Image (cartoon, rainbow, N blue to C red; front, side):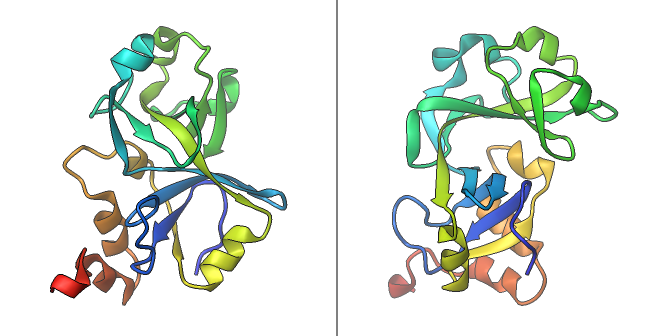
Length: 187
């Protein structure tokens, strides 16, 4: 199993059935001895980006909605972006590199300036967080599957089932979990 780190994914196992994390995919932003911070990639809210942060609407990837990043700090916004090919993120003062072309975006920046360097952004209300050791315990009990993330996971089209897609590209036998019924008792 891959190590948890910035840019990795936490895929909810079929044993996580609660409303907060069932069939979610969490993109890990930070992971260190103090804990873990990430955002849920596949929980879209009903709020259009234009209604919340209108200046960022044009740069937001489709669907241009705010996503529910997790159950913590839901009244604050967090933004992740994917840099265009050939862009040096370290040379961009309003971007903080997570891994590869993925960066945290300073929402106080001018989105028109960042449109030159970013292929798109995703805005999240809230985040998912774990205290030191908590995520390791949840992984050990089988609640999460750790996998490498791709920039395309972050900006997935609205028609893409991110949980299913990410599971299908994992080593055997994990792709079988993608066929697990939503309500096994009805199967």
